[in-house]
Length: 473
Ligand code: SF4
Image 1 (cartoon, rainbow, N blue to C red):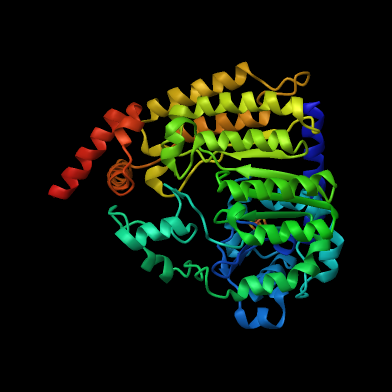
Image 2: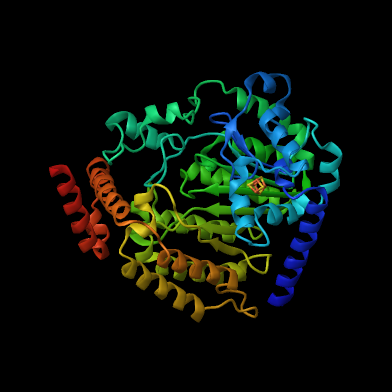
């Protein structure tokens, strides 16, 4: 079965590669059909690899489709039609130049939301009214969490802390609002009118019928009224092709949780959309998870997972586990929980499998990435997780367990840990920043790093020494 799936996937990819090459060697359907919109600060990009660029306010006042069809993207589309490589897509060019047969350009173009629209794209070519079939949107930066690796431009709670205490005293001050403003990342304040959001809602009735995937991120979408505006719209405008998705911290105030559950339940029960996927973020388990994602209550989180599984049999849940330097020690406990939830979910739901997860790893800020830790220590925890996953492989008859894809992701984490190429100097800088950030974190947020992470006692002492020595220079 798995072999067949892989063969079909490969066939699809190869077929798409030939079709793309028949246009040009740099053609990519995502440049036309996929968009990430940051309505908070007026930025856009096609897929999320190229750096986001600014949306032209003058253009969207005349035509809201310029939220996606910016002059920059149209130039890049023209380059792709001629076989030239837009610089912003270097993520794909690097992979292709390293002789890898397929980059994201092929993977994304082969996905159903893109490949079904190939001929439409060729018809439109450089027209300015292309309607994307895959949209990811950040409406609002309101969030009641301030996760350690997040930033004040993405969370109002983080912004409040920085306004009160200033940036963190790392070697280069961290999360400095002045710097975020210089980088044009600072969002329009929530209480002010936002022309990007206005343009989006003007555009929405035109794009909605053609949407295949619509994903809301934030901020925290479950506390954002724009999310409920979307849910209400869906109720009166069913779209049987639509996959709706929401990224969430899954700990909203009870009132909002009830509202979300009630509205989603109606939508799915009445089959208003094709399917719904919830993406709760959780990076490990125990009080260590609560330390990383400040604002999280794991009991509340678990209660909400179980409530949604029980009350909405059609819901699919995929956890986003962003593995960072504080994740390894309780990661196995989270995997145990996921297995437990899978067993419960399969007795309650309408889909054969309802619980999934992904294991991306954190790259920024560098001092919170896994390679700041002593390699042997990290690897011992990761191997423990891998063994646990291998002992509990997906079992088709029981329909729970860890898939080959998930086990490969764990193996990739081990490879990334083994292959870290940080210089001694960079490691030292990361250790100093690690100590300075989390010791300040403890002071501001009344947390206790050494009590929460006893596994890091020696590492912490070493980081502290490096930081003090650096100060004495
Ligand atoms: S070429 Fe790669 S980076 Fe550029 S839009 Fe396509 S998938 Fe994204």
